[in-house]
Length: 79
Image (cartoon, rainbow, N blue to C red):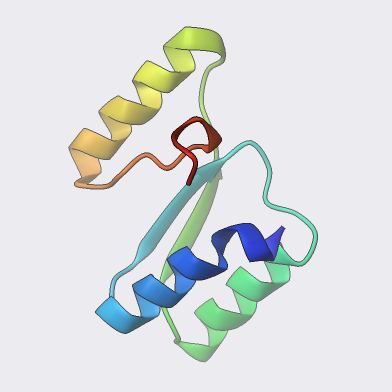
Protein backbone atom coordinates (compact mmCIF):
# COMPACT_ATOMS: atom_id res chain seq x y z
CA UNK A 1 0.00 0.00 0.00
CA UNK A 2 1.46 3.33 -1.06
CA UNK A 3 0.01 5.05 2.01
CA UNK A 4 2.31 2.91 4.17
CA UNK A 5 5.46 4.30 2.56
CA UNK A 6 4.29 7.79 1.55
CA UNK A 7 5.84 9.57 4.58
CA UNK A 8 9.15 7.84 3.83
CA UNK A 9 9.00 8.84 0.16
CA UNK A 10 8.32 12.46 1.12
CA UNK A 11 11.40 12.47 3.39
CA UNK A 12 13.53 10.98 0.61
CA UNK A 13 12.46 13.70 -1.83
CA UNK A 14 13.03 16.49 0.73
CA UNK A 15 16.50 15.20 1.61
CA UNK A 16 17.50 14.38 -1.97
CA UNK A 17 18.31 10.79 -1.00
CA UNK A 18 18.00 7.51 -2.88
CA UNK A 19 15.93 4.53 -1.77
CA UNK A 20 16.86 0.86 -1.62
CA UNK A 21 13.54 -0.82 -0.87
CA UNK A 22 13.88 -4.40 0.35
CA UNK A 23 10.44 -5.95 0.82
CA UNK A 24 8.47 -9.18 0.56
CA UNK A 25 6.49 -7.72 -2.34
CA UNK A 26 6.06 -4.38 -4.05
CA UNK A 27 2.67 -4.46 -5.69
CA UNK A 28 -0.59 -2.58 -6.11
CA UNK A 29 -0.27 1.19 -6.45
CA UNK A 30 3.15 1.19 -4.74
CA UNK A 31 4.99 -0.29 -7.73
CA UNK A 32 3.74 2.14 -10.41
CA UNK A 33 4.27 5.06 -8.01
CA UNK A 34 7.91 4.09 -7.50
CA UNK A 35 8.46 3.51 -11.24
CA UNK A 36 6.83 6.81 -12.22
CA UNK A 37 8.89 8.80 -9.72
CA UNK A 38 12.07 7.06 -10.90
CA UNK A 39 11.28 7.87 -14.55
CA UNK A 40 10.43 11.50 -13.71
CA UNK A 41 13.71 11.83 -11.79
CA UNK A 42 11.94 12.68 -8.54
CA UNK A 43 14.20 10.24 -6.69
CA UNK A 44 16.33 7.18 -7.36
CA UNK A 45 14.84 3.90 -6.21
CA UNK A 46 15.71 0.22 -6.43
CA UNK A 47 13.25 -2.38 -5.15
CA UNK A 48 14.37 -5.95 -4.41
CA UNK A 49 12.81 -8.99 -2.76
CA UNK A 50 13.87 -9.47 0.87
CA UNK A 51 16.31 -12.35 1.41
CA UNK A 52 15.91 -15.33 3.74
CA UNK A 53 13.14 -16.11 6.19
CA UNK A 54 12.45 -16.33 9.94
CA UNK A 55 14.78 -14.90 12.57
CA UNK A 56 17.73 -15.14 10.21
CA UNK A 57 15.92 -12.82 7.81
CA UNK A 58 15.82 -10.01 10.36
CA UNK A 59 19.56 -10.41 10.94
CA UNK A 60 20.23 -10.34 7.20
CA UNK A 61 18.22 -7.15 6.78
CA UNK A 62 20.08 -5.53 9.68
CA UNK A 63 23.41 -6.56 8.11
CA UNK A 64 22.30 -5.06 4.79
CA UNK A 65 21.35 -1.81 6.54
CA UNK A 66 24.78 -1.59 8.19
CA UNK A 67 26.56 -2.22 4.89
CA UNK A 68 24.52 0.39 3.01
CA UNK A 69 24.23 3.00 5.75
CA UNK A 70 20.48 2.45 5.76
CA UNK A 71 17.78 1.83 8.32
CA UNK A 72 15.56 -1.20 8.75
CA UNK A 73 11.94 -0.06 8.96
CA UNK A 74 9.51 -2.77 10.06
CA UNK A 75 5.98 -3.13 11.33
CA UNK A 76 7.49 -4.48 14.58
CA UNK A 77 8.91 -1.01 15.23
CA UNK A 78 5.58 0.64 14.52
CA UNK A 79 6.95 2.38 11.44
